[in-house]
Amino acid sequence: MSAVKLLLVCRHAPYGNSLARSTLDTALAAGAFDMAPTLLFMAEGVLQLLPEQDPTDVGTRNHRKVLDSLPLYDIDQLYVDGAALAEYGLTDMPLPEGAVVVDGDGMRKLLQAADHLLGF
Amino acid sequence: MLEPGAFDKEGFLRNLEDWSPEVAGQIASAEGITLEQAHWEVIELLRDYFAEFDSSPAMRPLVKYCAARLGPDKGKSIYLLSLFPGSPAKIGSKIAGLPKPENCL
Amino acid sequence: MILHTLNAAPEQGVFQQCLGQLGTTDALLLMGNGVYAALDGSPAATRLLATGATLYVLQDDARAAGVLPRLCPGVKAVDYATFVELTEQFPRQLAWY
Image (cartoon, rainbow over all chains, first blue to last red; front, side, top):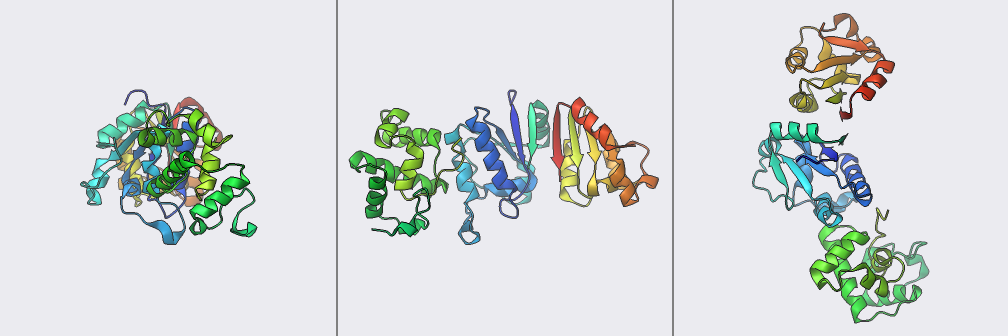
């Protein structure tokens, strides 16, 4: 948790607006320049991780599936808001590989340890 | 054979449902590539990637995915370049009937 | 040392999210609908003061909303030039909206 250069704070559900998409674009662009970001899914943002998404009929890509490809882009530092998971009844949901569940204090430490922050 | 209108101006399929192995051959020959077993192995892998991640890979993830699925000898840029010269992720995706990879920075 | 900006009314969930992340070395600038959290005597203002963070409100927005005459004494009204200075002082910034 010490050497987080760029932290993307994902606070919105995937399909209501384009913020989650912009997060992916930002993550992949940063990764392409060897600045692999760390992602924090916070509050409503944990809904981006729901495994059974099927956005075929809204004409956009499956956000969880694309998130699952991030390790292949060397983006593998994912943190998830544990309180939000509990609030949505999702504590037993399968998280992306290597994702770490953090509490409020853990999130504060992440934010304070990052060199750069971007909120989505 | 699909009509020219089935492709966008870069040669990617407009409707991904139009894809078939025959269409792959048609796209490949337009790229000057004759498909052999080694090509098909990567084409199938690209289609698996798309089914799993709902996106076309950039070069780095394609190499990693090949290494994981086909072994270290084939998980190399040089190997993929020998099959799909120039830009393996882009040309491979085109032949596999996938959308153009985004984030090809 | 984070400069947080909040553009959402206190009833919005994001207010709570932001509140939970404020530390004593941080600053918070209220803007847009966020200015209502600076109303003197409001529970929102009390909770913000309790974080120990340095509190600012964007003057133009607070004036527009009618909040400026009822500003909580612990919140400093600043203009855009000061906003820019704050972004220079703080190495990191996070927008809550």
